[in-house]
Length: 288
Image 1 (cartoon, rainbow, N blue to C red):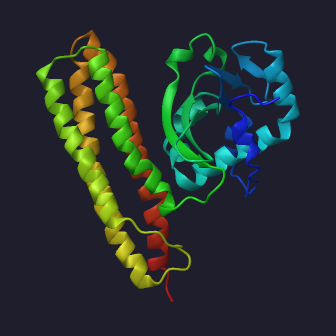
Image 2 (tube, rainbow, N blue to C red):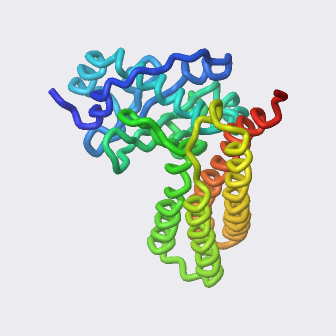
């Protein structure tokens, strides 16, 4: 029987199974999955047992039948965030303080075999009793059919426009008419648009280990230009976040969504600095 939400297991993509460092191993051993089944998110514990919302014989049978595939999925998720994000490095303190718990929420994304992942951490003993207090870490996109291009940045940067639209929807939902909010949304919207244009004008796709030095030097300048545009966006979002926290209840609630946008921008910057530019510059600066 086909259960909606487990269709991502039908692609059969195999993990690379590259070596993990001790921190990565502990995160893998403490990764929870949230998989949509109908309108319900089923949380699976690291041992692949239903932690929430409770017993469901149909889903339990599916889990038992697909146990090996689910473990492969956990490994694919971890490998993706190691290769295409800096989530673990940037959030290691919060993850370690939460006994290395990583919660990976899987949602559909336009495109066959592509899924959006949202990551959180939380104290294990309060994961179910105080679920709303979980700490948002960031997002990734899991490709189960095709290979990712443009170092994954072609997923993250264009998606900022979706996140900004979601933020504007929340302003309408909370019925916020504060002129300060309106002014900041205009500024942030323009910077999001400029970031997308800058990315379109500068994106490059190549193999870092095989590229020529000339190509690597060009890539350094192009990716730095993208980074500098994102820094401007980050600073504006951060300022907006601080201003909201000093306002009324509705504005304070809105700040939570602004924080998520800021974290996603920060995560792109961390990835460019820690994973992408560092690899390129290491090759450029290698003698001979």
